[in-house]
Structures are given as C-alpha cells and as structure tokens.
Length: 263
Image (cartoon, rainbow, N blue to C red):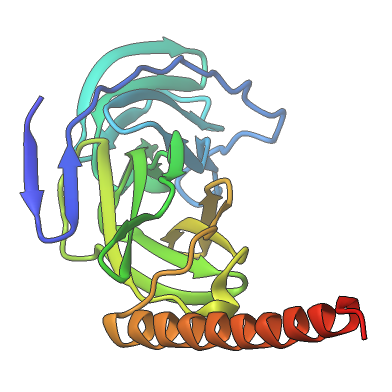
C-alpha cells in the first residue's frame, strides 16, 4: 500500500469487492411479426452502484421470437455470459470508473434496437474521525481522517465549529480509481466564545444528484489558547487583582486589630 503525502491531504489505496448475477424474466408481451412490428429491448438494472473494483451482472431481455443478434457495448471488462429464451446476462468485472454507460444492442428481423444502463462505482466513508484539538503555542491544530472513500475527486471535507464552517477543502483534482484514505489538517485560533463549542468534521460526496454525507463525533475545546499579548494582559490583570486583594486584606486586618485593642 502506497502513501502519497500532499499538502494537508494523504491518500492510501485500498481493496475491491465483487458482485452477483441477476436475471430478469421476460414480460409477456406480443411478439413482433416482421420488421415493421415494434419489439422491446430492456437492460436491467438500468442504474447500478457497486463498490470500486467490484463486479455486476446486467440482464438484456427482448420480445423478439425470432433468432436475434445480441451484443453488449461497453468499455468495462466482460466476464461470463448466461443465455436463455429471450434474455442474455453479462458479467462486468473490475468496475472502477465513477460512471460507465453500457448498451445492449439487439437485431430482430433486420431491425436494430438498443437499451442503455448506467453503472456507478462509489463508496461512502467507512469512518470520519476528528482528533481532539492539539494546542501548539496559541493556536489549535485540528486533524480529520476520512477512511475508505471513493471517488475522492467528488469529495468535500469540512470542519465546523457549532454550525459554522471554519474550513473546507474540495478534492476535485484527484482522479485515482482506488479506495483512499484522506487526512485534512487545519490550524485555527480560538477565543473565549469558542470554549465548549462542538467541533465536527464532515465528508460529502456529490455524485451528480446523489449526495452522500458522513460526519464525525463532536469534540470540544476545553482550554483557551492565549496569544503572548493576551497572556501578558492576563498576567497583569491577575497581578493587579492580587494586589487589590492584599490591600483590602491589610485594611481589614488593621480594623480588626483596632477593634480588639483595649482602651
């Protein structure tokens, strides 16, 4: 497994999985009697999502009672083929492109018709993990891990404080065809109002109308990071407060002693 270190992002290849065949029973419809009689061609499922690297079975059915020529047009690698009366099932292997179009072409008595299916490969993140903030100097370092996600090029990772987005990154420049792990790192300042505010990491896959969202468990800022100037001001304020308390204490002690002294 290779690790590719990028500015604030880290990608790691993962492993694929497989699929199962599905067959469709041909519906009972009138068969054509010649070239002028319409006949149907159906490719199912019309839309299928698989894990990247997986396989899928597509069933091409038709209503032509005559001997036909049937073929599948696709850039995907084909595996086994199963045939029956009025149908052919095709196995497609190692699906890695985000979107692939497949055409089943049937010629019946000199007339050619086709049906189209769309195969998509995506994987929602297995985990979205936000580490507890690390205080370095007077800034916090936030680190979020998004594991086993595909396609990375459609992923947006964001950090939120309460309901407000404080940082996000779009990974559209990545075109890899493997499951990947992504690491997002962000350095931020925090003020008194940020104490005990929930921090969360969010991963969003926007897949041409399909939106897949995942988020981390919240973490809290429990210690306030102060700049050197703020620390100096806080130290001066504390020293002044201590001085005032000592002066007030001294006055109270003198008054107490004066009351206790006999005339």
